[in-house]
Structures are given as structure tokens and as C-alpha cells.
Length: 288
Image (tube, rainbow, N blue to C red; front, side, top):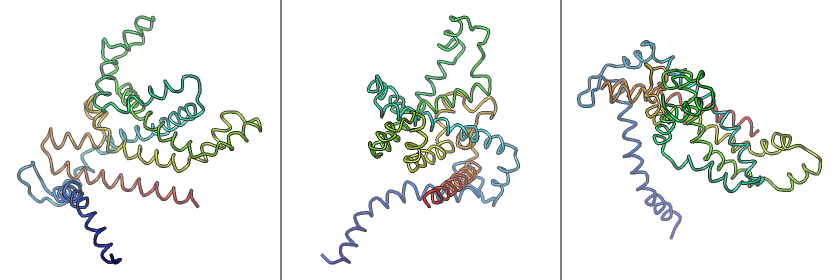
């Protein structure tokens, strides 16, 4: 078989995958882009130019939505550090490491909605959290967890951490397995502490893994919070806990403003691409 024939065989082999991507990814993206310039109720559409984008900027909801996403964005370093420490402890096979390896990963196999409803039940008025607090004499500190905005964000971030910990631990364990054991042995002989080994050997060796984990979770806090918000707070009170992706759902399927929701989707797409571009630039500088 000639080189030209091999190329055609390769292209034909990839054709089914490209067709599926075009149907299920390319067409919806183009359709959303087109309808972002229209007033669309899901059936009929009318071209209105940039009105939807002007409305996003001027209606006053955008700063609140960006603030909500920013709160989750600022929580990413916390789950990164927790996942890293847990993975190092498991890698060093501390007492009970086999049991805890399963426990930490278990929430990752549950759906986001299941975790959300479970935690919502725990923090309800007569849930397990308030019951335990009352039984240990902390009844005076009981609050309406699901009616207090800071408490609602705390619960949402708790769900995010709980669901992400298993995945993060697995990613960092994979990275740790590539570090030479001789480095650990030499460091121990030199009398380094556990924290010194963490910050001077492990973290520098895991820069690519840390970068991958960070970029995945930064994108997640912009496009993957729908399930948690839907299950725990419903975006309320008002729009106080509504991130951009949940607002898209509200506008499209509750208010019927499909054109506005399409414009908001394109706005979110630009934000995610811009953040990804910045992170890639930072990654290239770190590699130099």
C-alpha cells in the first residue's frame, strides 16, 4: 500500500468520528451562535442583532453571576492542596491507606445531583447536621443553612470538594508514581521533614499534573456547576447563588428566552476560552 493510500485509509477511518462531532457538537454550536442574535422562543425566531449581548451587560445580572463563579474559582486552590496532601499520604501507605483510598474515591462515582440532594437533606431544618449540633449542646449556633447566602455557598463548595477529592487524588497518585523513589530516599537520608519533601520535591515534580488538575477544575466551575446548584439551592434566594451556566438554564427553560440564553452561552464560551488561553500561556512560561 502506497503512502497516499495509507493517508486515505486513515482519513476514512476517522470520518465516522468527525461526522459524530459535526452532528452532536459542531451543529449545536453553530445553531447557538446564530440564535444568539435572535429573539427565539424555541419555535420562532426574529433577528435582533446585538440586543441580547447588550441586555446581558446592562440588565445588572452579569456582575452577580460573575461574582458567584468567582467564589467557586477561588475555592479551586483549596481542593488542589487537599487532593495533593491526601494523595501523598496514600502514596506513602500510611496506616489504613487501602481503606481510605476507596472512601475518598467513592463520591466520584455518584452523580452530582445525588450528592447535592444528599447534602441538602443533611443541612435541612431537621437534618443530621442540626440534630448533631443540638445533641452536643450547640443548639444556639443552629442557622437556616439553606436560607443564608454565605452558608449556601459553604454547602455548595463542600459538595464540590467532596465530589472532586477522589478524582484529584487519583490524578495526583498517577503523577506521584512517575517520581523516582531514589529522590525520597535521598531526602530522608538528608533529614528532611515531610513538609520539606512535599514543597521541595513532590510539588516541583508534579507541575504538569497540578496544571492539568487546575485547568480542568477552573473550566468546571464555569460550565459544570448546574447539577449542584439545581439540587442544593436552585440558584436562590433570587439569583444570589446563580452562576452563569445555571442562568442559561433559567432563561432557556423557565423564562423561554432561548435567544438570550444562546447569547449567554456564547458569552460563557468566550470567558472559558480566554481563561484557558491565559493558563496555556502561563504553562508555556513555566516550561521555559
